[in-house]
Length: 524
Length: 105
Image (cartoon, rainbow over all chains, first blue to last red; front, side):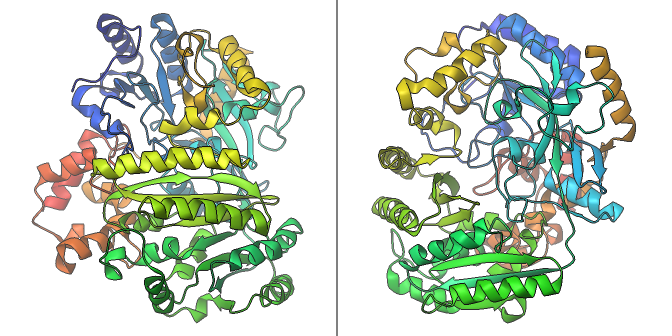
């Protein structure tokens, strides 16, 4: 099928706009027709091939080119879908919510503008990947660590803007963001925080500047195009010791979370540690067919076989100790004694793990900020290559963890999927990320996934649990659950949208925020 | 205000480092975009999956000589199962051609 046009834009108007884009960026950097196959959602859930299809893509090389593109889009009412590197896979990749949008692909803006070892920060453009920044730091021999999400090819900026998380003490990426440059929908450039003051040298050191702190409104939003971002980097610690503690029973998760909360809140557990379920960890190093040839989720007997084979538990807690050895030793004694209360808990360091590949050996790199793509192995668990994340947030209590585990695992198993969950431990909350791996080539399986995903969103909301991030297909549904006081928050988002982007050209539908002319009949 | 922003940009640009070189050889393209899944090693997603589905002798792309350049170009642009597609802004047609020739040889 031909690439679709956005609502209200004629073929002539689009052609004229693309011609303007070619004059701005050069003809080689506007992509149309068959070239758009690469911009489709790599892991689609819908069976409707007309949804989430971009019309074209334009790839600028500078902030100035972004300004010109935005002005031209505004003049013609052409919607843009900005992506940093377009590798937000499982959340739609580079594909837009609104079909017909033109992807504003910032991959070519890939300059590392500064890495400051003394203060521990980097200033990067959107196209800089974790691999890029890691390689730069290594090549210069700088004593700085990154914090990486699982896939290292994504954008440092894009991940922070989508509230991504990693595994070191700097695991909350947006918390570690400091200072932005943003192109607004009218083409004007804004620098936030201290960046607003000419001649100031603390843009990447102090977040708040003077007046309202606005960086947050440019995350998970469609209020501007972020073209530079500061990110704090962790000084290389004097020592590092990763560990894994395994737990044998499903119900252990409640006690484990109760033990974890005070340890994390008091920084005895220093990093953004995770507890992962059996199948999620097993899928890093094996496939389902190696253990089970039946249909549907694996039975308990198979789960026990995997646990024995791979020396992992029903739940696996990976953490790390950061700092001089005497400090690490003291922290470990507290952590070990606390978890030893759980019957059957087993404790491992790297030297205790002999099998290869091995989950702790893999995680040992991730928890010190080495970018990798190892995690993609779990996509092959069932053979079909698709995956999506369902990610409600809850308090760090055993009761909530157990309740969420039961709610989600029962549902996904009922619909024929294995439960592959992780609990990412924040200071006061946990992200319960359930990855549903599915056969993306099977229309029936896609339909089944869509059904269970919508059910999960509604059931979680009914219990007061909201998702922190989602795939483009579910942005409206999840925005609709944040509806306290007659959708007051999303009404405020809409007011900001209307003020900053009155023609609604930036990412219509991102996070369920629609411009005025496309709002009717949509949530909230 | 606008002038100040432009001046600041120019100052930063002087110290800026592009994360990727414009022209890469086929091997360099492979090392930048492919090796993290298709390199040698027991954690490599692509290598492990090819070993399972095609056999161990066909697991390492860089050691194969049965992959036509056209097939490589198609898979890179369209993706295949777990492997997502690579967009032409990040991996240009010229780089893809160099990669395809490198892998096809």
